[in-house]
Image 1 (cartoon, one colour):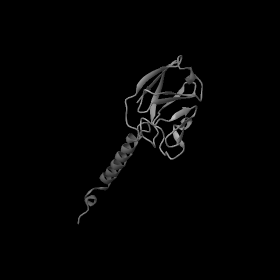
Image 2: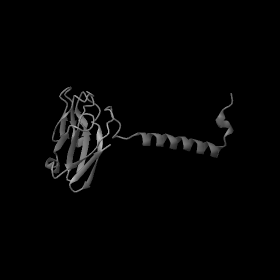
Image 3: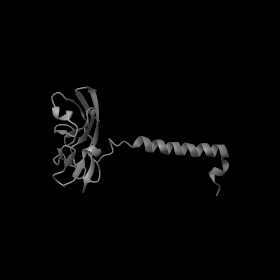
Image 4: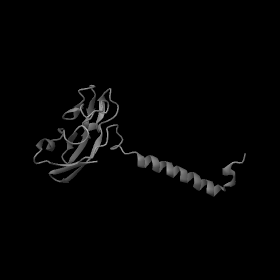
Length: 151
């Protein structure tokens, strides 16, 4: 049996190997998006929140749930003034739009399975059985008083 690589010259083999490595790197790099890597079903999310009306989000450490968006509602968490995170309120262990986590400041707890999620830590579970963080959405501060939440 004749090896295919035996017919390739050294420079061609180097280019071939480097091309494969680059292709592998790009595949992994482009396919890893922490905002979309979730077992929670995709639902189009695109809404705005006026911070002059929802005053609770002006205080660091506070979170507010918006139940009519996302798969099970959307929780917006204020880390610092001007720094916000948005998570789907669906527990990643009990994936049901009927079983929503209840937010209280920096923690969200699932009433169905008892999992807790730490909002200040990108929605990662603090206590199981859940092992996957809450689904995260993009948040943009449009001006000093309006947030846009979207996926």
